[in-house]
Length: 386
Image (tube, rainbow, N blue to C red; front, top):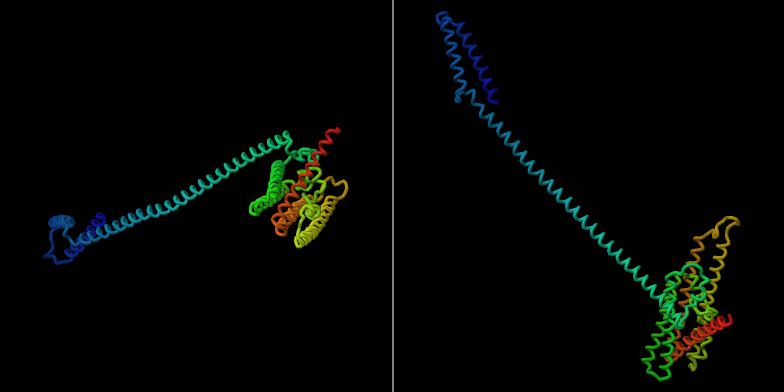
């Protein structure tokens, strides 16, 4: 910038010098200066002009501080903007980087939590499988021990040829639980018999009766779980003895027939109790007939579905999905039949006195106990004859 200012001042001085020389030449001859002296003058004048150009107080150099100052201000502003930009950009970067870092940390925390929960679920599942395996082994050992001791022989073990293939763990568990259930029923029947003979108080007798009712409720829950595992097993009654299967109706006893058989064991009954028991038997008969009709329709629909299709198709069941849906309906029939049985027991507890209910539970327990004893006698006689 200083070089430009110096060049401008030199041009101005050159123009001034040319103007002065022209003016001298146009003037009168009296004012004429010889060439030698004029050359000296011009040299002195040029030297003075060069010296004046380097004086800081000259007017030609006056604007230069303004130009330098303006240029300096421009540089300061530019540097200030640059400094502001350099300061602002890292701040924005730090904010964006901070948000992204928080998001990454949050996702990492969520991933760690999900992995922890997955490990816990896997551990719980493995523990459940291990406990189920141990429980199944214990039940199988207990069944074998009971068979050796002759306490209770599971009918399923005697007729395993009817169901080829491996037995489901749910069925093995049900058979073991049913063996305990039978033993508990025999024990409760003996307690009720002793309580009636000893003229136990009504409160104690009521406790025993309620325990017997809950015992049957447990049986119905066990049957429902086993029916979901193998509905044909429950319908066939393989978990009962042969004599019990002879009176089988939809996986259990027929309530109306049982009431009819046990009426003599419930006496003495008042006139109102006798009337209520007869109505209860008629109601059970109607419910049983409706369920039996529905079961017959299901059997007919299943048979027609299996028989569909042309010969030579090569498929055993043309409509497998429809047939499976029919079998799912079969599970509901078993549950409905058990519901009728349970409601019959509840109605009996409402209609009869506490002593009448106790006699009814004793009669029911002794009835099934005699059927099981008859089956054991028949099995022993068949083995002796062979």
